[in-house]
Image (tube, rainbow, N blue to C red; front, top):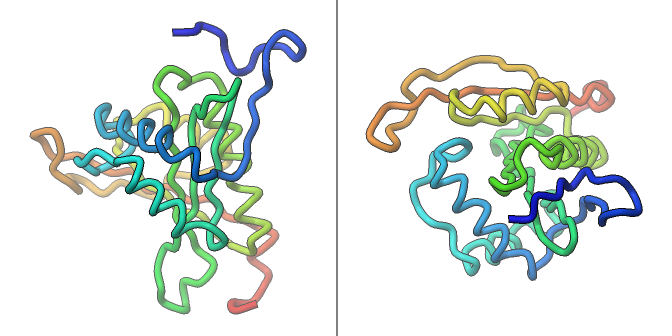
Length: 186
């Protein structure tokens, strides 16, 4: 494992780049999602995402909702996306986020950069609120949310059965104040 941090000084190492995900990223996105499934920190899924499945998912997102990757030295270190939260009209403008970081690069600022870019993308897309959820024992996820302006709004107790035990789920939200003054449907 390369011990170089993606936050290395300018000039000595490549810079972390946040960009829209592309078809070529599907395998690395699947691998990072697979790590989250193995680690039991950010997803309630218990299946392994394949590159083909992630490729189809990328296509479904294309042009509809932001799907970003953090790239450093040609390697995808993490990804984040927005998806519809609910189809009812009175909840229009609310989206759900997903964010996953390669386990070798957690706590290096990758999640913070991705989250900030996702917040900008949501604001520019006209959304008024982003919601998220993850297992309650994901201390890194909870810290990331606090550092980027999110607030915890509750915990669903014993929400899912995973890895042989009941898991609690934290609910978080981020309000996009600039877009709250806009009427729905605009």
